[in-house]
Amino acid sequence: STETERGLGILGIWSNPTDGVRYGDEVISILRMHARVFVHVPALGADPRSRVFYSAVKGEAERDVVRLGFPSVYALRPSILDGERKESRPAERLGLAVTRVLGPLLGKYRPTPVEKVARAMIASSRAASPGAHVVDADAILGATSSSSPSRA
Image (tube, rainbow, N blue to C red; front, side):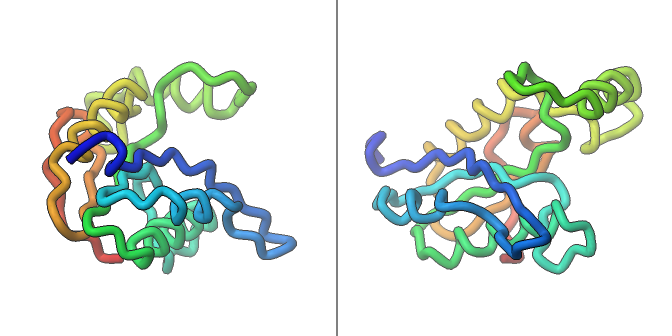
């Protein structure tokens, strides 16, 4: 597969519970890509049926990407992302400080370095196995492209 056949999406999925907007026009951009394989990064716990709003939004986006009909879709589900951000997120910085210390005890919930996510995205796009796949946090941390079929 060539680079033009791959779509690597880092969807800036946001939501506003007061006006019902679940995510922005990023999905339109996906439709225009005409990629044969699409790799995106929802989050650990993504589930459209979740009672946790964040997890539900990520799960809905994951489900909707699968419905777009790409021959190959990979949803990477990292835990809290560990990397530099331009914007200030004090609560996230505190959470990262705590989870870095507790990391060995947290299993798949330990912080996921953004470099590992990038490597897993590239590996998944190269694998390009037909169907919908979920790459969980443990697989991302191992920088492999192993996955399980999506429930989307």
